[in-house]
Image (cartoon, rainbow, N blue to C red; front, top):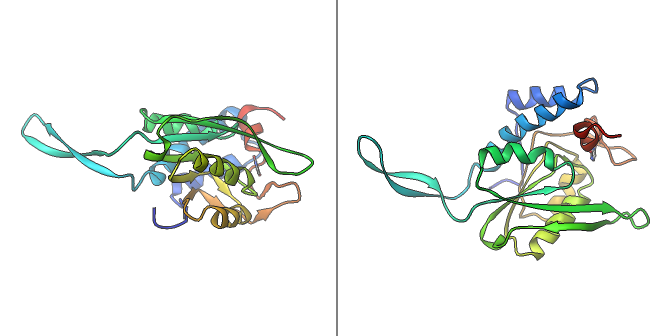
Amino acid sequence: MTSHLTIVTHPLVQHKLSLMRDKSTPTGEFRRLLHEISQLLAYEVTRDLPMTTRRIETPLCEIDAPVLAGRKPVLVSILRAGNGLLDGVLELIPSARVGFVGLYRDEATLEPVQYYFKVPPGLSERTVIVLDPMLATGNSSVAAIDLLKRAGAKEIRMMCLLAAPEGVERMAKAHPDVPIVTAAVDECLNDHGYIVPGLGDAGDRMFGTK
Ligand code: URA
């Protein structure tokens, strides 16, 4: 991808995002909207995947038909909210491989600490798409991408629903090679690290926890 940040301004994305921001939107509806938006964002984040051709025979003639090139992409969900984006993208790329990164915040140091890391083999030869709906401080995204690069990933891109300017900036500094696709960049973070105006805690809203 050429630009570091792509904001998907498509009317369907923006309409669904507004419904998700509304605090009166119930859990099931929130989850369904996230699933739908994930597919529209996936369209953008995969726009420039490498292509090749395969010789096929239509009922009328032979052609060199365009198909995806190379090894299957990897979707990496940053637990737990990343799972809200995963199923929708998998429906579009059913043969994708899937990895998971689990991080929690050490309350003393405020640094992200890894508690789970499982990714498919051959990361260095695959496009890796990191899924995390909320790019807030950027701490967990930066840490997850650090881990993925250490595991061999070279071609990484990130898909989120909402970003804060602070998170975008942090990612641009730490991982300028990783393009970000998002539905919106909001105003700021509040003192608790929430995106404002945002939509609240994405994990709580999609899973009905509090
Ligand atoms: N994570 C969330 O779920 N919401 C925010 O606003 C920030 C981080």
